[in-house]
Image (cartoon, rainbow, N blue to C red; front, side, top):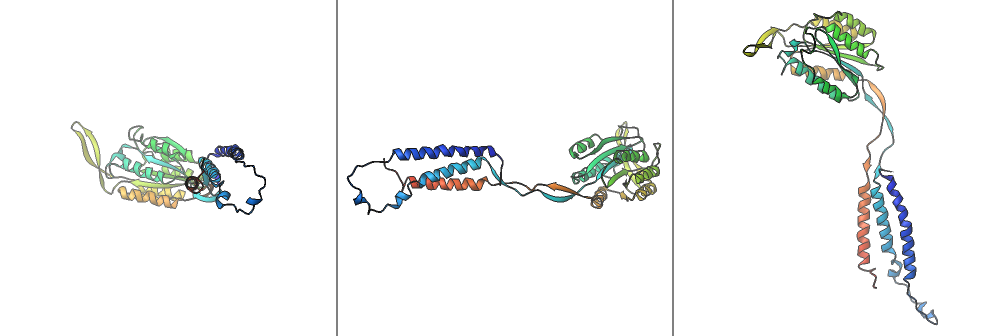
Length: 327
């Protein structure tokens, strides 16, 4: 047993002068009667009340001692124990080109991808996770971090138009590799999501995949978009109008990137399939690491408080009934 407020235990020292005061008071309160001989009283047996006359004071001392223990907050706890948990380093590479505004996923591709990625992050408590965004160019939105609250807040600032438009898949992948390549984790993963064909940047996606393989980085690629055509919002003089555009995803390249790095390619045609993809990746990417954790402490003061309350009731009852003092 441990105490949350152990300094209160020093109050137990106050019981010493309290007991001393009681003994002193008891010695001064003894009545005296002078007789020539005490032989007449030797055959008189002592009443049981005489033997119990100090019991109320003993109970009062115990009550005070227990109340001090309650103030010190006794707690029960287990010892440190070794356990295993699961965690890896993950970089998310997300396409934020204007085509991600297509509404074949609801409310649109980008918002659906952000929502599902946020749920994925919330379920990976022990992972370092970072975020790279790309369109015609790429930049790091958040480096690898265990502080997922910061990462999720940075998701709010993601929207098309913050960088040059286009789809630089190879550049986005290379940026993510650069952020994760020096990680000390045994398992390094990149999840790359796009809805188009590589048409910008100086690095080809397959070249970036070869670099990822060199650094032991596994890449999962996700092509997001329905089959055929998708509604795309266009600003006109009469407000937002929707036009059907052809869904064009370079699945062959995305499959090659995944194969080269030992990952896997997925196609998300709606919100449900996108959630299933992240759930599948979540199940596949589990690496056990050894950690040391401490079991939860439990408060024990309530039991001692109830005992103190019961003893106080007994003490009050005795003082006012069978052990009542008559002045």
